[in-house]
Length: 287
Image (tube, rainbow, N blue to C red; front, side, top):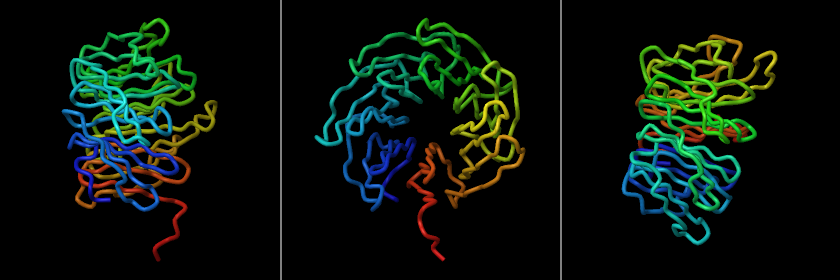
């Protein structure tokens, strides 16, 4: 899929794939044919993060500091929110609650059904690049250039825990699942308990890690999987019990950055500089 330019974010469901790009657009793709069904324009900066609100409503966060809501059926912008005083680098949704994080060092909690700001989470002293939420939407997890991961109570807006993940560099990615946090910094992926205890580090990436997704199968045995990607063009799959990756896919032959990955049981979707790659595990082998 080579019509995208500088892809920074991807999301998908069974029928459509959505990409956000440095060219300031949000594109809707038919996931079966690979054709671009529609291009939304309206942002004044690159689109760095995306989320489904409903199957028909797409949320986008941009370098221009706005969150926009796009209506896929009617092919128009439904709402625009001036959300932050700097670029929005990431966001996560749980039900009607959306959390956006920004260069302005804040995380903002929205009732996105009403486009209403509920809380501003302040405590990081440098830009926030990554965000996730727990399963019931009571906790927000943020990763920042201040080298920490913070766990916030959504209701009170207070920091429950600060984890010093890196001694040298920005935390670029976080993923929470069942009491554990995977984080990416420099060329390292690390796994922590929610309490802050470091479980394991994974060190195979040669360049900066920019996206991680964690899935814990058994919290007591700490079994599960992590998928990570970044500037080396590689997507790696890790078993949480093993120091070596169990699978590596090279999505970019030129070694370009894989800024965003999303996966389910059937597919891994990665956004590259000028294209979107899909690894489809139910497709027949080409040979």
